[in-house]
Image (cartoon, rainbow, N blue to C red; front, side, top):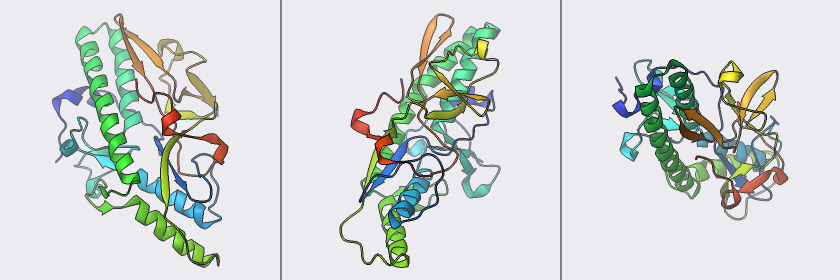
Length: 266
């Protein structure tokens, strides 16, 4: 049975259920850039390859062997190894950050100084894990083989090329000329949200209209926005990346490359 390191002990205190599928966003670029957003059925070989790349990104994980502090961490929440409930499940980086922030709010309300210290410590570890995950994803997009939660190796670029070729043949487009390029970037629409729900009640969540967005009568953290949290005078800062319930496609003008991206983790 998988066990967690003591440094991540705060995550065991609060269970947070978040419908997160995509956090960091990779974009398949061939004739034009595909993004993640409102669901759209794949109608071209490029669409199909982009969706395959997005799905594969959700499979990329980091573990203790990578220096990860919170077990098996990926872009999204996922099933445990071999679907065995005795193993630890794949946990998304947004879920980790949201749980730590919730623990900080609880620590302040309870007046628990020890809990507050552990929250600050866990936040620093989560930031380190986010950088390790980003590096692993970037390597995967450049063609490196990576592993999923079950230890299965896969290559995102090869999988995208296979899906593209299969769909190109089906659509009568002929043989692909050239290589596939996958870019890491972010959605630049002001209406994009993190799909991470804000703790209730809002008056105790230390949020305002600038840090949240309401969808379907639910309040979520706004993506790529610094969210300050006062825990006994200690100002902790959080940032959540855009996320969706499933990989899908948006237009090219809503994509910005990583080099011009805002800070994703603070």
